[in-house]
Figure 1 (cartoon, one colour):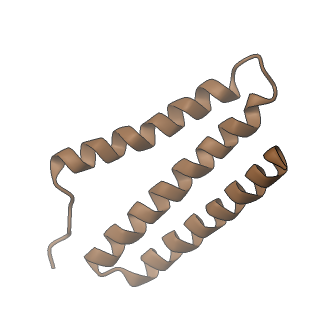
Figure 2 (cartoon, one colour):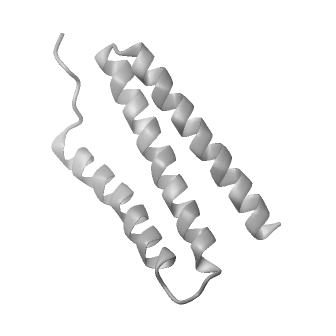
Figure 3 (cartoon, rainbow, N blue to C red):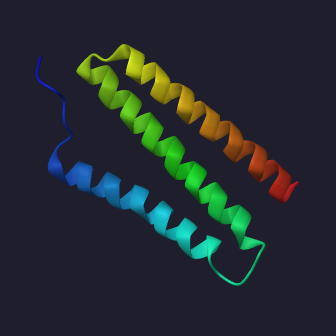
Length: 91
């Protein structure tokens, strides 16, 4: 069975979108304002959630259901941590 791949422009745009979250988190984690650390960690959780969902869809299209479920579990954990952090940050 051939593996499923996204077309090149969509793959590049998705990688740029995910990379922007990593760069934003890096900037926010290592600046002088300590309050921005929470926003940096939230940015990393958004990246982790997005990457996990993307990997889950790709694994489902390639027929790997066990790996897709593991990716879904990791994305749900990241989303839970993101929601918990956001509520404690703004609540």
